[in-house]
Every structure is written in structure tokens, then in C-alpha cells.
Amino acid sequence: MQKQKPHIVPKYITYLFFILGLISAVAFRAVIIIQHIEPAWIRPVWYLGACGYLFFFYYRYWIAKKRKKAVQDFNLIEKLKSNACLTDEDRDVVLYLLGSLKASPEDKNYAVIFAMSIFAIAADIALSFLK
Image (tube, rainbow, N blue to C red):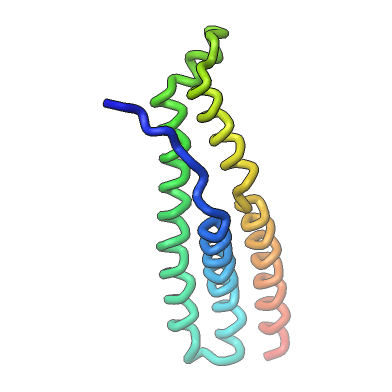
């Protein structure tokens, strides 16, 4: 079976899923605030978050599997451990892996989710005391 050389998805796809992940993260954190403001909106906002995460995390799963498959198909770990010479094709795969990691905005996503979680907790505590 021939190895398929991986490639980085277009930037617009990366950012589309980045935004989807952020919208989902905000939706889930907003639920805690919405319960104090307009409880009827809890279910629609929760479904927005859940459906968004469904697609976002499938995309992240697909990217992770693609990276692992590239490492396995080209035996990159074994070649590096044995100090074997890398072929031009191997170098292209290593460049794909490093470029994919560099291009991914996942670190920004994690930072925003972290900050939104702190905000949601603080808002819930504050709104609970205002009742």
C-alpha cells in the first residue's frame, strides 16, 4: 500500500473550525449566566455548544489521527532514533507535521476557553449573590 503524503488544510478551514470551537466554548459557559437572565434560552444555547463541539472535536480527532498516521507510515520515530538518513519524502512529512502544529490556533482556543471558564464561574457567583 502506497503511503500518502499529508498536507496542511487551507487556512480558512483551520480558522472556520477555530471559530466554531470558540462559539461552542462561549455557548457552554454562557449557559451558567443565561440561567440567571433568561432560563428559556438554556436549551438552545446548550444545543449550539453541543452541536458545535460535535463538529469541532471530530475535526480535531481527524487532524490528530492524520498526524499520527504520517509519523507511523513514514517510520519517523524509528528513523530518528536510529539516526537514519531521512529521505526527501520524510523531510516533507516532518515539515508537514511541524507546519501543521505551527499553523494550528489550538493554543489560542485553549487560552480563550480557560479565560471564558473563569469569567463564567465569576459571573455565576456574582449573579447568585445578586438574587
